[in-house]
Image (cartoon, rainbow, N blue to C red; front, side, top):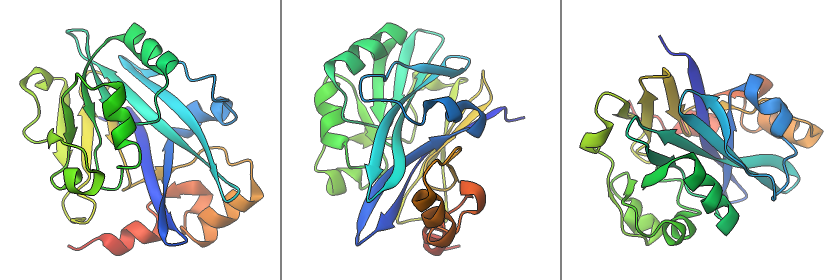
Length: 219
């Protein structure tokens, strides 16, 4: 039985790709207006933390979320890259020992170079073809590292070949971590943001799969 669902995502706008991130509505409301200086890891489940990065584009209030998954060994998986600062890196290291950096879909390449520079000593895992779109050398997500067995499953999402999205299931906390296949924006303070989500992305109450990603389904 799944207990939590965490989200990281993006959508197209004006010929480009806007990075979006969201997680469970009940855990997001108090963090929508987080400043750039307030990016301490927030515990959301057993051995899982998130760090939110504010992002507003064309008046749309989105965000960037990095998920930290700490294994029983104390080693940590950093799910998704971001423009990490020195203070961010220090805060991440206080949670656990970073051992892997990853991006889970071909569309999450915006901060690939920044992420690799911040954690250059780590294996950088990503879907097949990610190195081509990001100009960063990566290793395959599948098969998953042996150290993850029994704790963190990697589930390739079939049917969306342009994304090559991978889901992650954290067994101890029963948490599923997804990217673009589902959105949950939680509290949306901006009327323009609400309008965009409902009328362009076709997300009622900011929850579900966007019209763009439904279009990408090929089976």
